[in-house]
Image (cartoon, rainbow, N blue to C red; front, top):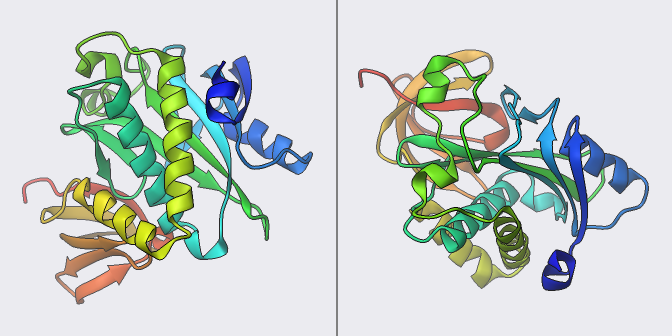
Length: 252
């Protein structure tokens, strides 16, 4: 049913170490783009900043996505984040989903989901992992992280079907990945993505070159990255691949 509705090839598992690892294995064995690997749980899930707790009750899916080299990593990350945000709102009316640059989805001031892109060498088929708390927040998070994390059914007015959410994700991914290759579509995507960005205009901290820095988040671009007003360097663009751990600045 899901494959017929979306045109994607879907591999479903009760448990995997990492859906990203399985998707990469399938890609290396010849699986084409528009292949998805989904698991009820992961035992070794990971995000951009480390391990990603993945107990039953979430949506854990990795997608094989055909990507143009010019779209890696920033534009494709933005397209996928926008696709997932729109999918969440489609299946959970009333929920407003924001993007915390570059790869997290938040509802209010709490994290709902994270994305992780992984590519190998010159391959144009990228593995894009999505981990979304659907039914509950994982129990084994540190207390401060758990307090800043949410689950979709906690925010929604009624239960959310995981199958319906996955279908919406796949369809919106198709839409926005295609938009990247059309100038007008790319411009529209950037406008829609920027309108969802959390922390714009706020003081933030972030990691750059192993050093924690502060600044004001002034703007973002698909191609240029994050524009920060830095107390030492003034207004400066930071590329996605150089920046980690963007957070609201405490006490700012």
